[in-house]
Image (cartoon, rainbow, N blue to C red):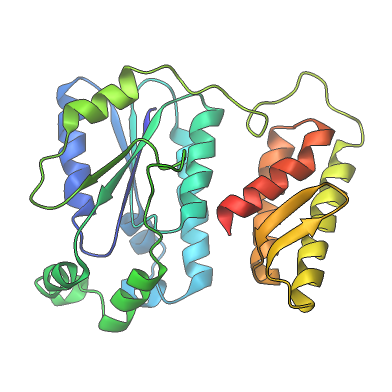
Length: 273
């Protein structure tokens, strides 16, 4: 399924745009599937304002979104991910899935000034409103998509007053060649017998080097002499562990050349941190 990633700050009209897209593509005789962050939150038994203030709950739902996308993607129909998608690392992971399944993708940003979004939020039913603390926290966390980033491109930014460029979106999904898989998403014909050992060893060695540098006060442009690579900036040990685990999962499923492991892991970290 060609993939459409919806993103935006709270109360910026994401679900309304999702329904508009569904209607348009249905009229084009395309099957449309929707992965809704809001529906998964409700299904998980979470209260919205509590959910977005609990990183563990958010992590679990992001994992369910990735799993749903991986199960549903194909090259024929349309899959829309309706949610905040405010973390660029999460959008990058979805982009990697689209490359893996050789299907085009695009990003639609619901662009709305913060004060307008708060007014929209205040006009909702009380049970559907974001609290001020939750709203402000999500605004601070939001990582705005950039058309220069290949995982955000092509990017269509629309305000509530704009008409969706539906034909342009259709063209970006159905009138282009499927993306070519790269080393990070394509399985090699033959894998080394010690692949899993080397994958675990190299990725752990890089994580340890970042943690050591951070303890020494080096938080950016961390050099990895063993691999002639540079980590752009550090992060917490917990996040490094999470990102390493995600990288291991992808790499075990879709093996890469042994001499590419370090480069791809560093690239993944630099894009996700």
